[in-house]
Amino acid sequence: MSADTLTAHRPRLLGRTVVNTVVGVAVLYTLLPVLWLVLAASKSRDALFSSDFFSLSDFSFMQNLRDLFAMDGGLYGRWYANSLLYAVLGAAISALVSVACGYAFDKYRFAHKEKVFGLVLAAVMVPQTVLALPLYLMASATGVVDTFWAVFIPVLFNPFGVYLGRIFSQGYVPDEVLEAARVDGAGELTTYVRVSLRMLGPGLVTVFLFQLTAIWNNFFLPMVMLSDEKLYPVSLGLYTWNSSATVSPEYYPVVIIGSLLAVLPLILAFILLQRFWKSGLTAGSVK
Image (tube, rainbow, N blue to C red):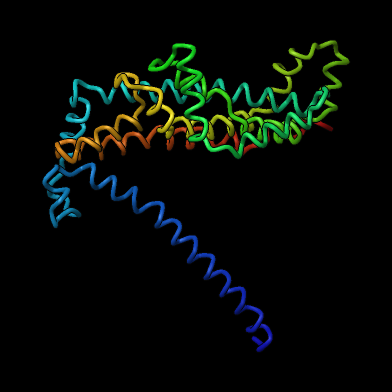
């Protein structure tokens, strides 16, 4: 191999090494906390603070699991069900609304369309914590504070989802298909439900996953809106237990194993739905 060839290969190898190193560090940064959480969830309270943390001798996973669902009269199960209701139902409705709005911004003409869409983009940049106080005042005025609706209704509207809905509509729903449906006599609602919505499947799933993650991890809004522990989501419930652990150390193991269980729905959702949002469902729809 000539000297010129070796010189050409060195930058490639160096670049590949740098990329692999960065990826490896990122993987470790992501997986090490999860590994610690898995190990800690299988330890008793005494083993958590002992020097033999990585030993497999003290395995208390099942006992911690029983303690988790027995603590405070089984409140964790109620919190888990609340989070599933808030997140799954809220994300499904939010995805449908967001994709429909994005589709309307893409396919229809109306007065001041781009200006209104500019307001949607501006809303994307507003932090959710800034909106918590105005939402609380509105909920207080309507009498829904400390109810299911105080947390559920605000999560139904997602400006970023509307933006994604418009992007997916531009890429997945050709105008030719809509024109063909209209020529066949289909109305606008029928065209959207029976033709466009099927093409927007990947976009719908993508918005659903984003919103599912956001609602599941939502903490500040429930903390502002709710005082009844039975309405808490998992995130807020574990926070209250963790605050109590400084006084009552028996909460430490249940907080850790509760945190581990709280990660599982998001992992399962991404595993089960990844093939839908990665695939192009409209391939070959336009000839």
